[in-house]
Amino acid sequence: DAMVIQNPRYQVTQFGKPVTLSCSQTLNHNVMYWYQQKSSQAPKLLFHYYDKDFNNEADTPDNFQSRRPNTSFCFLDIRSPGLGDTAMYLCATSRVTGTFNQPQHFGDGTRLSIL
Amino acid sequence: AQKVTQAQTEISVVEKEDVTLDCVYETRDTTYYLFWYKQPPSGELVFLIRRNSFDEQNEISGRYSWNFQKSTSSFNFTITASQVVDSAVYFCALSEANYSGGGADGLTFGKGTHLIIQP
Image (cartoon, rainbow over all chains, first blue to last red; front, side, top):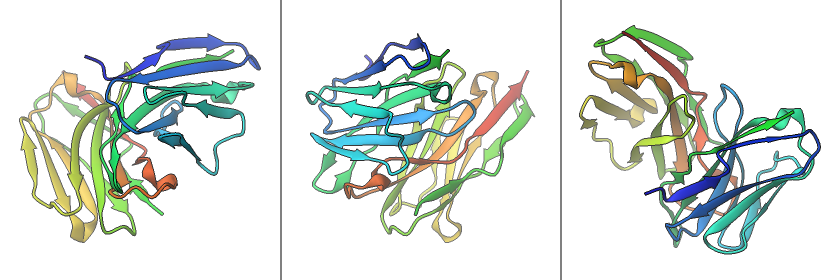
């Protein structure tokens, strides 16, 4: 059974049209991550939530936002997508107990194409 | 700062050959995790192994084996008797063991090695 579920699996949208990607988890993990993976590149961390606390990477464009309305769901919002935002977007979760960080579980990803 | 280097961009071997994927890492942390992930053409990241920095024992799982050497900061991955289904991009990754609330809490990936197994 899938434990980290990303929807949709594929998304095509127009240049400049806002888009939202969804991630849900059944693991009850307190940390959720969003990564961007461009073609033939390694995944790159965009931001993560520790419970409700948002942690943004320094080089994540302002165009990218995230919401976590509850433990199970986390959304990635791209306000005005550009052609360079075409990529695979990966959601991951982990459990942090005290300061001890457990391994991350990844979803299958959303392939986003900006036309 | 953390860094993971996978110097081999692409490796092509004939089925049944053994193949080793190299991974060298840099970190200032004394406690950390090392990972290997497989990414087939369908795109999902498949977890293969996690090793913490305290455990330098080598591990074998079927045709897969991992050699962790702290002295050389390496965590190499060997596939024995390779099969066509092993064709994929393989990523080595590093993370801190202790959550700090900063950017290092995510995984730092190497650039990946594209492994091609020819029939």
